[in-house]
Figure 1 (cartoon, rainbow, N blue to C red):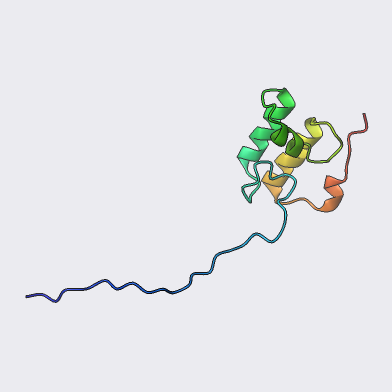
Figure 2 (cartoon, rainbow, N blue to C red):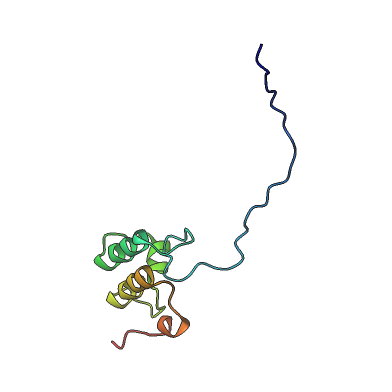
Length: 95
């Protein structure tokens, strides 16, 4: 007869990551990364096809009170080139 294996369980603790900071402004869906989904959400708000108040608020990436092409540009740049520094987020729409 071949040997048999018996499964045993142990109560070994497993480490889990705990978020320690707020999501980046460009992370509109707050999933921990800036990706094409964030770009799409920002574009949808800009075009008026997404009116969820929480999404609209987060899509105002530069915090100037309006979701416009500048917010889309910041989100796209963050997606393509990594997270932007604080100076890029401080820009506001001159209009």
